[in-house]
Structures are given as structure tokens and as C-alpha cells.
Length: 225
Ligand code: CTP
Ligand code: CA
Image (cartoon, rainbow, N blue to C red; front, side, top):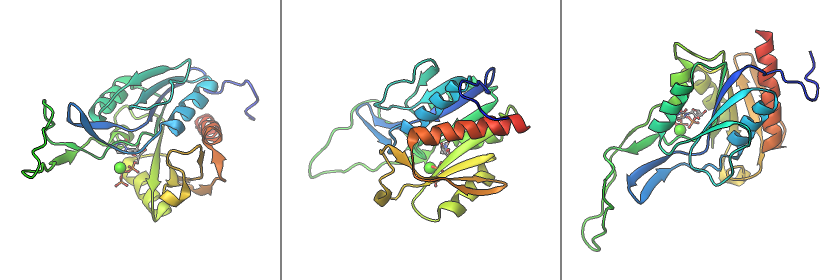
């Protein structure tokens, strides 16, 4: 069945999308974060909503506006993102696009840490953040389709395939985010779709076009089984 213009193949389907970075506080004025504009995740949430899905977008701190017509939950930290995602289950589809900080500060300070020039320089003790995609991929209420991203700077395909297995995902959307590609923070993306069936290289596309194609692929997979 072709996806006609105006068709709503995802009507009645519940989708969770994560987008943007997370901010892990060091103290009330400082944080650790990944680079992420939220553009790709927000575009995917909007594209899925355009196909009729009931989308909950869990977004870290971003400078771009909320897509209109969907339920947006704003969070700061990875722990908050995990809680919001788990609270949104059950769902038919989960697309984890967020650039979640892998570590948080073990004991963030309640007070601003003051500098003491020429004296002690603070060191940060870190601890692991929850892996939200892995949690969802192995959850008792696992969505029918679980999709992750893999931002890599080397060995893109093998790293992405390892993530597919480890995290219990159906697809990994892999991209090369080496600084020379200009993908980070930009408007375009060049991705590979890694699944248990193989690898598909997509051409260089606008992030909105990547989102439209991915939403169509999701709708197609869901209709197949
Ligand atoms: N992810 C997540 N929670 C985390 C870390 C990552 O949900 N704490 C998700 C991302 O949203 C993405 C996928 O897992 O969909 C892969 O993220 P990535 O950072 O590429 O993988 P990691 O497993 O964190 O491995 P590494 O950073 O070492 O490459
Ligand atoms: Ca990571």
C-alpha cells in the first residue's frame, strides 16, 4: 500500500521521541552537555505527527521552538528524560534521538562553586547516566518498534551495529558526525539505516527530509507486522 499524500497511516499510534541534549548540573550555574541542536529529533517528531501519530516529544534544552500540535515535555537531565520516557509508556513506537550525556556529576553542588585563583582547582567526579534507549529496548512494555541513533566519528557501521544489538533496537540511524562533515548543528544529514536485515545508505538530505523518510519507513514497518 502506497503512502498517499494526506494519508494518516499512524493514526491511533502512540509514539515517544527524545530530542536535544541533556544538561547535567555541576552547580546551579554550570553544566555538562553534548552538542545537539534538537533539529533532527524535533523534525522526526513533527513528521510522525503529520502521519497521524499521537506523539510525545521529550526534549532536552534546545533553542528551537516546540513543534505545534504535539505533546512536548521539557527536561534538563538524563534522569528526568528517562522518567518522562518511562511515564509515557506504553507506546507503539519509540525513537530515541536525544544526545544524552553519558555521565553526570556524582554530587552536584547546591551552591555555586567559587574560584580560588592560584589555589585549588576542582576536579569533577562523574557517574554513569541511565541508558534510556537500552532501558526501553529491553522493557517489559517494549514498543513494537524501537529506533535509536548513533552519532559516530569513526567505524560508523560497526559501532552502530553493536548498538543495535546491545540496546535491543530494531533500527539504528547512524551518522558520521566528524567535524569535517558539518552535520553537528547543521541543517543536513547523511545517514545509514542499520537493521537486522542489513544496511541502507541514504543520500545527503535536509534534516526534514530525513525525518519524512524515517516516518514513512516506520509506518511501512508497522504495517508489515
Ligand atoms: N542513548 C540513550 N541514553 C543514554 C545514551 C544514549 O537513550 N544514556 C541513546 C541515544 O539517544 C541514541 C543511542 O542511545 O539513540 C546511541 O547513543 P550514543 O551516544 O551514540 O551511544 P552510547 O551507547 O552512549 O555509546 P558511545 O557514546 O560510547 O558511542
Ligand atoms: Ca553516548
